[in-house]
Length: 114
Length: 114
Image (tube, rainbow over the protein chains, first blue to last red):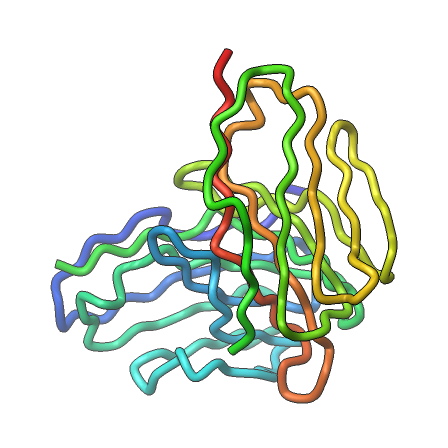
């Protein structure tokens, strides 16, 4: 088991462009979470999936953000019309069961919007 | 959203010293977790606590779930240089619309001098 993987690790884009990030959870983990972390802060929850169903979305997830997990395995997070305020580390985590609070994080995708 | 107050914000200690940090909340949490994050990487789970009063160890690390369920503590004994990093507390409420998400503190930056 290789753990949670994220791609790309770094992304630099110009304001107004769209970006998409991918997360591959630990195999057979049915819960997948997205968080955002800015400098000097702890991770902030964005959304999570149980299998392919998106069960909860934070108010941080504006209309420009969309997440999918079409087959209940990997997930993508898309940001449309990026803004400088979107610059952050985007973290993905997975957990094995709905009752388990133990979330295992990937290495993150560092987004810089110029 | 829920606020987790983590202290101290930073610590500078000598190798071999013991370290204590804590996390408090105005709300009751059903689960407390402690993570360590290195620069440019995702958080790594250290310890998870599920019951009020629970004391759990992981090597030189010991964490406690406060009796009031509104706080948690992490101790590191005999610190070594590789303990350097940011330590985050996280909590899960498991109620209503917030089921699943973790709330994080702002972290304690630990520096260990050889």
